[in-house]
Length: 404
Ligand SMILES: *Cc1c(COP(=O)(O)O)cnc(C)c1O
Image (cartoon, rainbow, N blue to C red; front, side):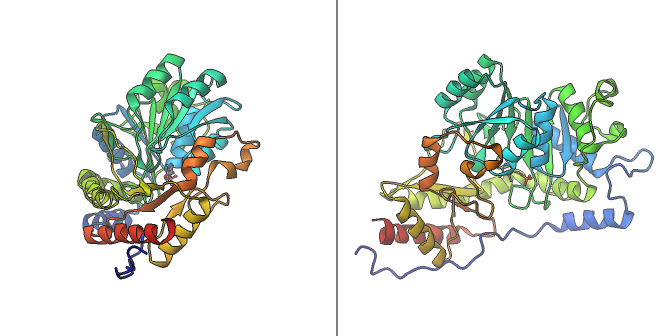
């Protein structure tokens, strides 16, 4: 057996351990706590709330006209769908490899999903998108940049414009990421971002919605639960736009609090640097795994300015049983892999067949094949480059032991 002479490596750090928040965040939160003004509309005359300041800063950062804070990215996606006009029974195209809050948002909007296949590189299959767009006549596409893999946005927009399809981008894993130098979330009509602990900025929970469309922005702010206090927002359309919608738009009470906004504001200036740190880690692992015979690594196009806060690879020419055994042995060695091959939803991971609340699910053989053999793990910034090298070495050892 190959590799027998090497010592068996064991990894001991936690895959769920994030970095502590910077002192400036703690200081700012303390100030807000001392003021008692935690609610975004609890401002004194002339004061602009922390949440409003964040919205303006985030809009400036990505280059959008408007921005609205939410309690989560999932709630922002739901509101985005409502605000672009999705009504009960409308069809919404969506790539089938995503996280549960995405189908959850479609369900919340009482829409009907039309799932689109993914490719071996984990992104939307453009041929299947075109085919389903034609067949279904859907007028919306909820594009999830799942695990930070960015599909060819030029082709996506070309197809969607040709069919008159409105695009909503789920950028939970692509905050700070670009396609051809342009931030994700600015290609479609709306972009939604997450500030949940495991995403790119950590505020526990939090969501941001961006758009250049005044009607969408006004409705999104009203839906978020702005009462009749929307004038307090600064990254917002003119008051007249709200006048059109204020009696037609329910208050869903999905606001962001000033504490969450303060945490995100302090971290935003270091987003670029954090992205570089993630990518340094990604590249160490990628280099180690590149020539392993049984491993396929996704091709990442030159235009994709990714932020690799997680790592995915596919085991080649093997069986599902062996993949399960591989994941088990990796876990025994301290390398916690997630697997979308299981029919039973587990932890944060679920696959389209288990979203039974939609009723009958269509067959997605290509996606099923990719998910059956794909392994996935987090890359927290608490891991050093040396840690990343060790993880890759363990993966290599286990491939030799279990797969070959
Ligand atoms: C986490 C996540 C979401 C939802 O974000 P929340 O802020 O937790 O609601 C949506 N899409 C993807 C791909 C995610 O990973």
